[in-house]
Image 1 (cartoon, helix red, strand yellow):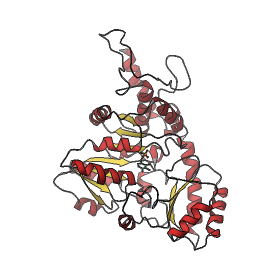
Image 2: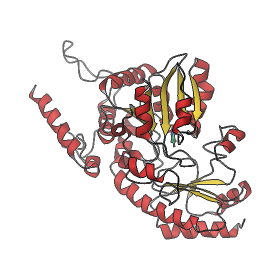
Image 3: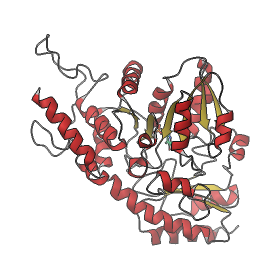
Image 4: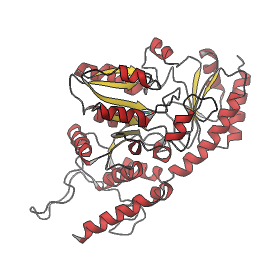
Length: 397
Ligand SMILES: *Cc1c(COP(=O)(O)O)cnc(C)c1O
């Protein structure tokens, strides 16, 4: 019994720590059995019942595994929620959260939602009778007018992808609560280092941990965190029932990545601001999207709900033709889908992350053919700018 008190006490002490310190002192950083300096990888599918009257804490790894559990407790601590869950991809986490809903339910979803989430809603969940309305969440009136008698949830993604529009999380979470809706935020771009939606009133936070949390382009994973135990039990039931769990090796790799989150985010953001300023000053760039730029329409809300602007910038090179030539001319960034890694990644939303969106829907949502998305890594920013400069100047408008 005294161990329960110690655990509670330890948990309180951890919650009082500053975020950077929590990243390294999250409770499982030292193995209690051996003193080992990292969480052991429990490569086991099942657990021996020494005494059938006193079953072990974990009995089967789909339902629970100590390595995965350490990661799940870690993300819950970082997001300030009660329960964390680790899934084999961001889409698996998002899918499990949507399984909270039933046939006949309606959801309100941010219009420039991640392409895979759009596909899930319009190609799979619609077949199961779960309906979604896509609205511009920067306009609260538009959100409110999408409400139907059968609306059960509101799904936000902010900053949005790839046009980096900002949604007022606290305002919509409060309205959702009034209407009895379950509120969810995809927090992939900001991470809990900059933004903690549960503190703003949100019910469930989702992550593609493949991006900034993992941070090294070497692991695919998803995470969910609930604001209370009751929701935690529901997501647990879904995770176990759907069989959607992250493997132990990947759980370990993800914890290894998360430890350096604050150092990586802080470095990349300083560089991202420089890159955004540099791009803004160029006459051959049609538009620059970055919430830290003066004149960004969401900047004030961003500063209220987040402690930073992140490391992703989108810009319009003028045409699809030029964007493609620039992609072939850069030498430093990975030209790839994905973002949030130690190395910079330059991607082409129209042909990559948002290819699953019909062309006319893309255009409506500002995802022009000339749009490029730059996820700033840890390289020296002067080198990144020089490289982009040669690629742009070799390929004038
Ligand atoms: C990548 C991404 C996802 C999907 O995550 P996967 O790990 O690729 O399944 C969801 N939301 C956002 C914002 C993303 O960038």
